[in-house]
Amino acid sequence: MDRRNFLKSTGRWVTAAGLCTVAGGLVLRHELAKSDTTTVWQIDPHKCIGCGNCTKYCVLNTPAVKCFHNHKMCGYCKLCTGFFDPKSSETENGAENQLCPTAAIKRRFIEDPHFEYVIDSLLCVGCGKCVEGCTSFGNGSLYLQIDQVLCQQCNQCAIEPNCPARAIHRRPAMTPYCQKSEQG
Ligand code: SF4
Ligand code: SF4
Ligand code: SF4
Image 1 (cartoon, helix red, strand yellow):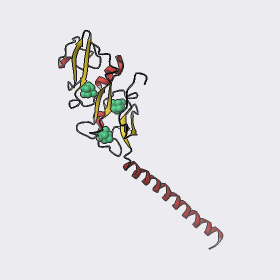
Image 2 (image 1 turned 60 degrees about the vertical axis):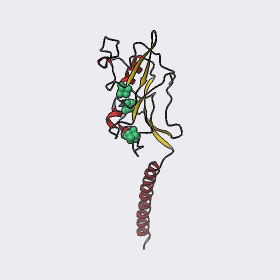
Image 3 (image 1 turned 45 degrees about the vertical axis):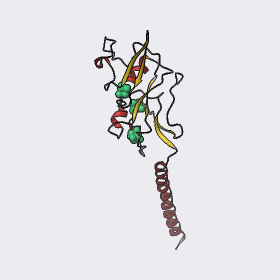
Image 4 (image 1 turned 180 degrees about the vertical axis):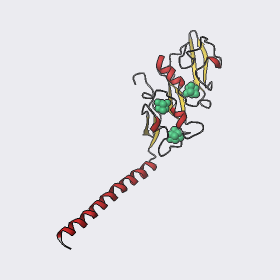
């Protein structure tokens, strides 16, 4: 083999080896992601805008995304903007006055002028309407989280690429839920 043919043939082997390394790296990354049990999918509540895509894109018929309520942050408002439909002029608890499409938020009188709001997670479908309402006019004490009991930990969460706020991320399995605070 002359010098020119030797260099050509060596070049082909180097290119092929390089491609194998890249492909191998991608396969390895994929396998590592699949076997990653140290982190879980979760929503960053400080980024989430309650757009409704969680309900639309979660692979489960009953979405793994649920509304959580930070009672320490809540103002116990009489006119809760996460509870009442802004189109409603009534302040009675009737379903027709509520933002929640499944009546999953229970409103209870505490003492004038305070009311308590509790989420029935069995009824919640994670639509985010209450979150959007509370975040727009209140302090954001209602927020969405992926329920770790329900979530299947899909290799690629189906919501993640469809989240306009890029709020879906992986976080340590030891602390799977995000704490919402007023500071952000
Ligand atoms: S408005 Fe949507 S996210 Fe909020 S409690 Fe009702 S179903 Fe859940
Ligand atoms: S990982 Fe799967 S089950 Fe969990 S929230 Fe995402 S799509 Fe739903
Ligand atoms: S898709 Fe993103 S922004 Fe929309 S409700 Fe889910 S986490 Fe929030």
